[in-house]
Each structure stands twice: as structure tokens, then as C-alpha cells.
Amino acid sequence: MYYPDVPALEPDEIQLLCGEYLAHNAHLDPREADRLGVKRGLRNADGTGVLAGITNVSNVVGYDKKEDGKVVPIPGRLIYRGIDIDTLVAEADAHDRFMFEEAVWLLLFGSLPTAEQFARFRKLLESHRELPRGFADDMILNSPSPNIMNKIARSVLAMYSYDEHAEDTSLPNILRQSINLIAEMPTMMVNAYQIKRRVYDRDSMYFHLPTPGQSTAEHILSTYRANQKFTHEEARLLDLCLLVHADHGGGNCSTFTCRVLSSSGTDTYAAISAAIGALKGPKHGGANLKVMKQLDYILENIQNPKDDGETREFLRKIMRREAGDGSGLVYGMGHAVYTLSDPRAQILKTHARRLAYAKGYDEEYEMLCSIERLAPEVFAEEHPGGKRVCANVDLFSGLIYRMLGISEDLYTPLFAIARVPGWCAHRVEEVEFANRIIRPAYKYVGHEQDYLTLEAR
Image (tube, one colour):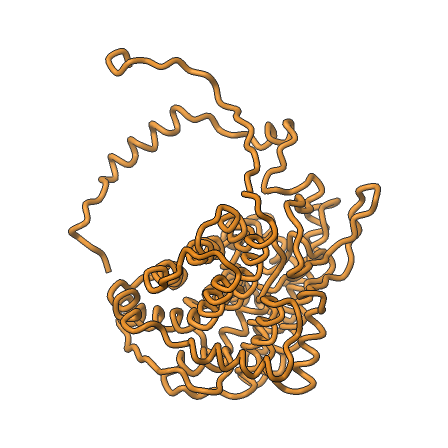
């Protein structure tokens, strides 16, 4: 779809403007930043993150930093409000139940809900899954987008117009807005996908009303699939994906974005929409799609997927930019914090295996396991002295979505659906306790110039 009545810049005009920019703006040399002690990307010289705040929401552990400054790799841990993610997963497995909604309560309120609180909370989420009257028609169906993340961000911003207390930053109001968004965003996502199918894919679209009594994972599968049918195992696996993505500390790009906007005193819809925009970037939320494209590419170009030697050498070619997309990256490997292991990757790997073999994705699954095992060895050989790398959560999440029959259009949006509870928890914390606008500094390295009158230029 395009809008021919909107005037566009001519290509030649754009090239002229680019030339003007390049002629008058010197290249910013990263070495100059290092010389000035600038911590690019808010990273320390050893790769660890610059401490920019404190939080009670969650903790991401991947290394031990000694008093002498030495960074010691340790097995990764992800902790929600003091409770290890492995403990939450073990509870879900032991009692064969969905855990995402309990994690939402835990992240928002800081404690585990009682049975009565949990039952009421689930009912609360269920009752708010439908969008306001007229919202889907006016804000989604009448303005489709080829990118679902873009449409969700716009939809969240549009909710401002449907909220009489949109600017109220009191604790009760932010919690009300947070619960509404957590409940409504899956519906926004599925509606945006359906109209995208109709307009851009020239395919049929279908809309289903929420079914009472369903978990968030069940609601997504039920409204996404034409026949609304899914197995309990499928829903449990999707619930697990939502659970492990629900939060990841205050320093990741999208959460930090949410906290930066929240520190300015802006409204909830602006802060969450900005976080969605940050997550949309392929360096943050889009990595699992990159993993799947690279996985398909590897399987197409390797003669024997079970041959470790052949796989190892092909990974080496990718790292040397002799194969793949030229980035030199093995997607799904490496993380800013985790060094020896990412607990989320291990959880998804373990739980994806049975369904992978049952649905005929065993070759894809085993190749991902080979990449997880071999890539760190090749990376150490290609980058001696560099930091250790391990599989991250994206290595297996994309395969799970593919096994569930979920369109690639929704890989990153599902990440956003899972992460909004964490964003909201950090927003509450920033507004309630930080009370200081986030304002780092940038070193000016440009030159002075005289002002010339328009006639003299």
C-alpha cells in the first residue's frame, strides 16, 4: 500500500541533501571517543555496562566483577524480584500450569500473589483484552502497517485519546494503565497482523473474540489461528517464551528507553510506545528472526549437518564475512551480560526438544544445538583474547515460534507482548523513586565557525 497524494522528495534532491551533510560533518572516530574516556554505548572498557541506576525489579547475572576490576565469567542467572527464573519454570513444570500471569504480578507488585489475588488478577486481565469500542476500526483497520511493531507502537500511543486520565502519573493510575496495556497489547498485535495479511499479503483475515478463562498464551493462539485450535503443550511452550522474556534488568535498550522517558514526567503511553520503538531495532528485538534466516542459510549450504567439522568451518566463514550476510555475526550467540550461559536459552532449548522432534523440526533443532556447541570454540580461535560467548535467548525462540506456526511478522511483537510487564514495572519504579531526569553528557568535538550573512555565503 502507498499513498500517491503524499508528495515525496525526488531521489536527486535527496542525494544533494546527503552530499551537503557529508561535506560539512566530519566523521566521528571511535578512537577519539576512547581517548577522551567516553563510554560508548554506555559500556565500560571491559564490556560491562555503566551503572546508571538501581532497581528492585530484576537482576541479570553473567559475571563476577572483583575488587581489582577483573571480570570473572559465571553461569548466567535471571532473577525476578529475588526469585530465580529457573524456580518459576520448575514450578510451571511440576504443576503443568501457565506462569506468565504470575510473573506479571510478581514484577509489578514485588511479591508472589495469594491464590485469591491471583484468581482476581487473571480475571482482571481477561476482562480487559477487548479494545475500547471503535478502537480497532479507527486506529488499526483503517490505517494498516506492513510492520506490526510500528502498528502496536502507534496503537499504544492512540490509547492516550481513550483515557480521561492519560496524564495522571500517580501510582494508582500508572498501575491501571499498565494492567490495561498488558491485557490489550496481544489483541492489538493480532488485529494488526490480520489487517496486514489482508492489505499487504492479499490474504484472508479473520477476527476472533477473546475466550473467557484463557491464559495470555492461549488467548494469542486462539485469536491468531483461523480455527482457534491449539494443544496444551503448544500453549505451555508459548507461555514459557513469554515468561523468560518478561524482564531483563533496567539497562537493556528498550527498558532503559522506557525509564528515560519516564524520568521526564511524560505519560505511560508515550513511555511504552518508545520502548516498543527501541525493541523494534534488529540489534535488540529482531535477533530471533535473524537466527532463523541464518539457520535456513546454513542448512542450505552444508552437505552434512551432522558433521561437526563441516559446520565448524562454515561458522568460521560466517565470522570471516566470507559467507552469510557479511556482518560477521553468528546470530543467537553472544550477550552483553551473559558469558558462560544464558538461562533463558537453556530453558527454551530443553523445552523445545520434544515438540521439535514431534513436528519434524529435528534437523533445525540439532543444528541450533551444534551452533551453540561449536560457535564459542570458533569465536575463541578467530578472536583470541576476546570475551567468551554463549548462546542467547534468541537462538531457540525463533524455532519455537516457527514450530507453533506463527508468522515471522510476529516474532518481535511477541517479544514486546512479553516485555511490557517489565517495562511497566520499571516505569513505576522510575516515577515513584528515582525522581531525577536522566541526562548523560556528550562531548562536543566539532569546530567553531563564523556566521556568514545569507548574501555572503
